[in-house]
Length: 271
Length: 365
Image 1 (cartoon, chains in turn orange, yellow):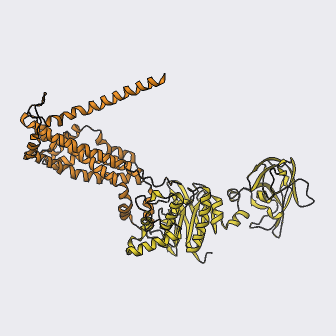
Image 2: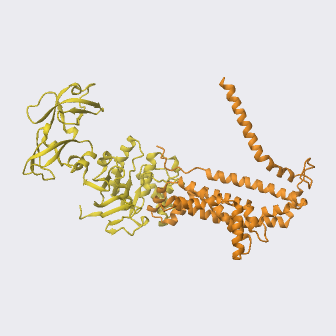
Image 3: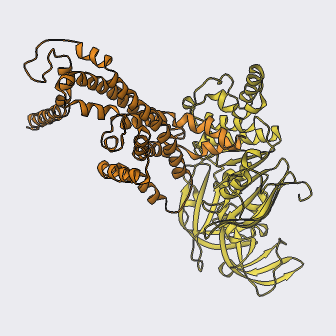
């Protein structure tokens, strides 16, 4: 009696899972689909297969310029926010200090504060103080949220880490600096790589803050948004979007893999 | 002992907020000694060890190692090394890199480095283990690698924080003997922290029994066991029967006490001087009591009845009820004769006997 019931239950769960994944991914997959379609109009039926839009994308100076702008923001933001996140995570997990919990929540807050509010606030400050809007202002705006992500990753990495390993290094004659490089850093390296990839992706994809704070040099999301007004340019934006989709997916998958890789369990002392 | 004192802990306290983890402790440890800090968890023994290591610093007081004050010396500049309770084997390094971790600054050639590590592997009886990954080691092997890593630069002092706690019983007993033999052969001063009294008795030259941030008694294992100076020490080390008693007379050190139901006891001279009329505790170890089925002609004896017994293979434990004493008296006897059933175990009516020397007198408080 129970066997068919059980089978039906699994069937409905499988249908739900498939429907859920379809809901997430099918709309996104229209991007690569139309990027190979031999027509300037984004509509069915498909006309034919072409690489033309990819070639156009690579030949467009403004589009490539926007791509490099995004990298110019994303790479330094990833490095700086990962350094800040790692140092903060080390302080939080290693030292006793008053008000630690509230400090952590305040650092984490940018993850939940709506970007549009932060964007307006920063724009008001920038115009009041008279700071010229540029890639620098975008990067500064990206730092808090990226640092929060990095802190979150690095805390989970450092919490699964036996403190006596660092003490052992100290007693074996190494100072704090060499202890960090010889023991702490190698053990948290997977977390650092994951943090770099994730923070870069966040900065690279970010639209709202960049929209408020960009000057004459647009980042890629801003440029793509501006191109939507010109139907003729749209297919090459789709082509670029497809490539970014691929790269983002690979980066996120790789960072998750790095983050989970061999949680360091040195003291389970397998007797 | 004081003259060639090598580690000198002078009036050291450590406070964590309002908690006095270590409270005005002074201990002198000799060069080459195997010294144990013994006590229940939370007694301050690990905090004291961490202060010797330089991982904590005293709130007040000073620690001298080989004549040098340590209060401004960081852990990485002290002539000490340490084996951690968790062993703290670096998981990203292999056995050779773990053991040779502290040799970086010596700038050895590869051959010299390998030779030094190889010699340590010989010492800990794990030759050929150079390239094993840390996760491939068993608990006992991890313990040995941690030991080799700590000893490779020949520290003046080796600190051990319950290093045998994670091992199973058989391996632990084997490592106790090996550790003791190793300590004799390298001649390094060992300071050993444990909560296992049997382990401390087996391995140590001297033991400090600690409780609530202070030490109760520092003595050799046999003195701690045979001549405890307080009820707490007598209770913590092994099992002890206590009887309320009152001093009748004290002449030339020989003390006569009236121990109520246990009768009048004559106790040979001990550490403490007692005076007539004083309330004391008479204490007797279980193995120093004997059980007989007939009333002995002379000597100390008291009548009792069997309350419970436990057979432990090499010996048996009996609990004998004596009129007028609330707690059954514990008696331990070697099972020297093969017999499925101990004859005494079945007898309801019996006598306890003991020699005068078995009795220890303690302050009653």
